Amino acid sequence: MPIDYDKLLRFAIPPVEGAYTERDTMLYALAVGMAADPLDPRELRYVFERDLLTLPTMATVLAWDDSWMYRTGIDMTQQVHGEQRIRIHRPLPAAASVVTTTRIVDLFDKGPGRGAIMRFETEVRDKARGDLLATNTYTSFARGDGGFGGPPGSPPAPHPIPSRLPDTVFDQTTLPTQALFYRLCGDRNPLHADPEYARSGGFARPILHGLCTFGHACAAVVRACCDYDATRIGDLAVRFTRPVFPGDTLSTEMWRDGDVVSFRTRVKDRGEVVLDHGRVGLKPTH
Image (tube, rainbow, N blue to C red):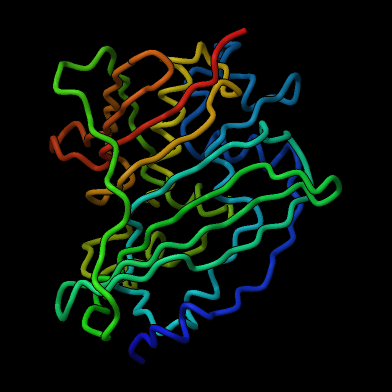
């Protein structure tokens, strides 16, 4: 079923309610590579209930429900995550009940054989207090859906990476089971678990969630640039450029310029850039 541009822009996405506990917060941190050294007390703050901290990228899995995308006419076997932006309005609690509201904000037609780009925005609010905790902006690249007659266009220009050598590099090897581990946080897309489904989308085997790779990069920034204090992060943005396979070693390059950290992530063995144009805005220290 081809995309209906006018219908899709009016597509009503119902709010989603969900509750998460300290267990979910710890599971998420483990799923994106925290506690690689389980004896490091700085790492334990993300996986142990005493003084538990929450990684900001966990905002992408709270009350997550992408079932509406399967009703849009998009060929989900050809859909990949293009870009992600997160604004943290308040540090995420270690446990809370939340409500998420999602709306489609842009839809660009790149033409026949060139795909389509959809941008949608999700707000995460504390259910009890009504406080806005985080705003997620997703850019989805529908590789098989160009030429439906919609307007051309592109998302906002990405953050430029400095031309100098990185100030620091953090390497971490993902687990062969990393995608199966991460999907327990909420994103059950079979592209990351079912070999047959992955092959139907043109991949030799299931790939790692882009947001799992992003979570690893965020954790690298927290370690290298925030002295393990994730509450310093105010906003994040990244572009997903190539797939990652579970078991790959991720090498995150970082540049620090005042309260802005630029980053880029490669698969170390292949040298391929898998996250590009990364930006983290830090809150000033008091």
